View 1 (tube, helix red, strand yellow):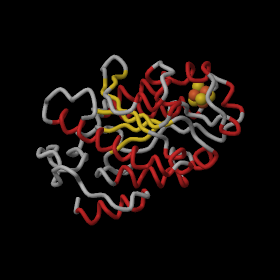
View 2 (cartoon, protein in one colour; view 1 turned 135 degrees about the horizontal axis):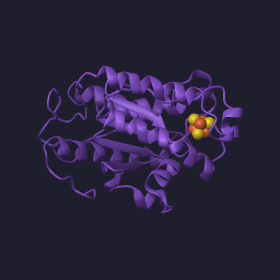
View 3 (spheres, helix red, strand yellow; view 1 turned 180 degrees about the vertical axis):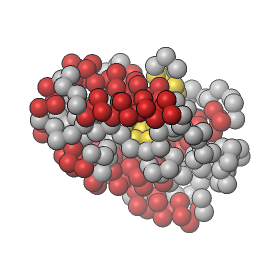
Length: 247
Ligand code: SF4
């Protein structure tokens, strides 16, 4: 990515001036023209069996009545992005706009998330999959209840099995706590590599874009998190074990 373009994306995030203090990591992901980018090479095509599993999953979420949220939602929101992605971003649950449009992270928070992802070379239409812990909107955007998460999490686990991401980015307290099974404050979960599920997929934590809209002073910390996630991904693509902590 051209530095000027990255600078424009950072300005869109709300970080006015960004000057790298050290050279970017020298190795680039295979197939990427930009040594600083996080974008992967084109994913292998999906098999017919995988396509069928995705369709089955989509239909199950559409018709799901496993928890009471089905009664108040407009529609279940499975996720958006290529169905084989190295990157998986996970948020909390659909909000009002997401519930109406059937896509996660739309509206102002979604635009901020898109700008943050673009700043590290990722795009929801081509190389990152975006989903939520809960597939249905809780009324009045209240926090998900434990029994709702328990009912819904198997859908996310199946998504992850199909996507086989190399790295996960949990955005916000609810996603981080439910994915990691902890109630440690978000600030203490940032800046290190966690792991999720049977595949022990590396997972990095950052702030939710809706929080960043309310607290712009933390946008720079979120940018540090994204750079950390990108460096973890680049280390994985080089075949090395990623540093567990941000240096
Ligand atoms: S939140 Fe999940 S478990 Fe509950 S109704 Fe929606 S899809 Fe089903």
